[in-house]
Length: 517
Ligand code: NAP
Image (cartoon, protein in one colour):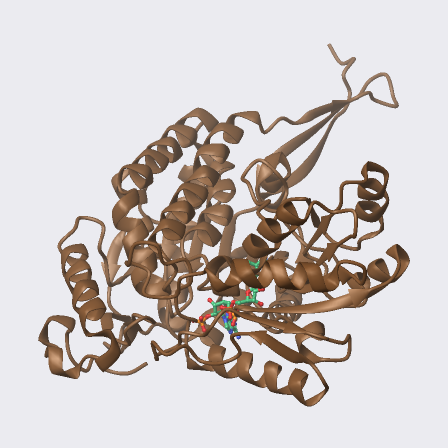
């Protein structure tokens, strides 16, 4: 946070990190081009106007691959959040009264604009978040798919007629928008975590105040710019960023905000859940995971290696559904470790704009230190590194794709989300033991199993205490399926026909005295 230090274009090449000079120069040129594009915004959006913080304070947005400052954005707090809430509240009346078809058309246009700016949005994601461009482009399509899907779902919000218990009555159920929604999102999917919330919210007539992570606000602002260009009226979508606790408190305190939807850490989710009690708000939480990935001895080894690789190393291990514990049957443990190691060795690490790179940097120094401390804990308790295990020679926050064997259930690597490119391999003897290890956690978001036994697929899928189960597949998220966790991984579901219910209230209407003439 703080006042802007120097603009990107003023950085002399001698100041660039030594190992990264060519890549940093290339990224600076991408950044300079993006700044001239029609989607680039570096102010907050309140009531359809691009605004600075009231006291002029700014926050620097860095490129995790190079450490360069991409832009300064306003460091906002309670005051701006309250303004954004007022704008969203004012816009609610007219937006919720549009027909579903009218709202659907706006959302469809927004989707079209996101897709026609896919390349620029992908570059922006890579620039501020670090993931490889190919993955970033995938996120743009994935993120946009929620807008498209809910543009369609807007037209299918059906109520009900209930058979009455008395002859002179008629009973109806209406579905109406919850109202103003406060949406708080993390840095690991700077676009998709927003569209997964805002898509259904806007589709059914809610308005929103979005708070993206301070680490990745530029993608959110670009998406908001495209929403304005799509004709989504001023005030329907507002974006504030800066002092997270102050913004969160303002959203929680306002009686005008009727719903909080949050994706992020379990610790912050719990705070928001407690805070929402003050004004009895609806709440949806997509929190941290501790995904088990069980490889049975009847699995197809190639399928298992490919699946675990995708589930573990996507976004350099920084997703809530990343495989956190690879639990392998003792009969194939060594064989799997060897084949997996060969595959992981081939993962190319580098800046996200380099062709062929599949592992970018971690988001910041704290993330690397977390990985180091988890690894240290495991090594001190008898685990062994068979691949990687240290910072990458590229410097910055690059970390070597790592495999650790002989991991035990009491190690931090098995108990908490490492959120980095480290695959811990645990051993099991029986199916019951694998299920027990998998369920021995407070988290319950995603789980994966690799087996070619159909009966086992059903048995184990049913026994796993998780909201999502991938069978012989490491990438399972899609806009058409419900995404969400059980236990302390969260409340509610995003995406799919179920996702819109999170933004709707049921209203029961009883029409009496039917027989009066
Ligand atoms: P985080 O620290 O909880 O941050 C998430 C968001 O909450 C950010 O916008 C952050 O703002 C904001 N925030 C922080 N403290 C707050 C407070 N007191 N009041 C209101 N807002 C506050 O999580 P993260 O490190 O960004 O994201 C990683 C976590 O998200 C992991 O645990 C991951 O598993 C989880 N995640 C879950 C899902 C899912 O669908 N279940 C998806 C993606 C990620 P600032 O960044 O500006 O501080």
